[in-house]
Image 1 (cartoon, rainbow, N blue to C red):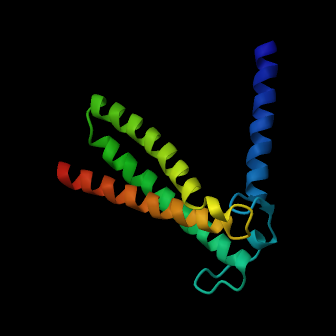
Image 2: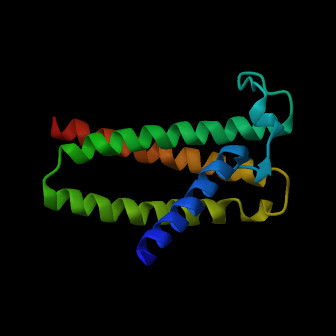
Length: 139
């Protein structure tokens, strides 16, 4: 009975996190009118829209990386797959730390999240290109 209550409690917390994440832009940390609006990333009309577009570009790069990662993973033996998992976990920590360092001097500024997301996007695209090369080598 206690485990069932704990499970319901955890489910409730996770649901609250998911609902909150829908209404909060992680790039800005602000609840967003901007998310409710249609943003034209080909022609952003404000700094807030520009930051939103940078965030969206990073998210698109991350989705692409995950897709290519799965493609590569499917080509590997179990031992190689375990090495890829370890390497990717280390790479994610490196990417995050590297980008934090790269944009450190912008902390506290209104453009900080934009600079951070630009770095994350650039490094994510580079990692995706690495994985695409690994896939070509195996074909």
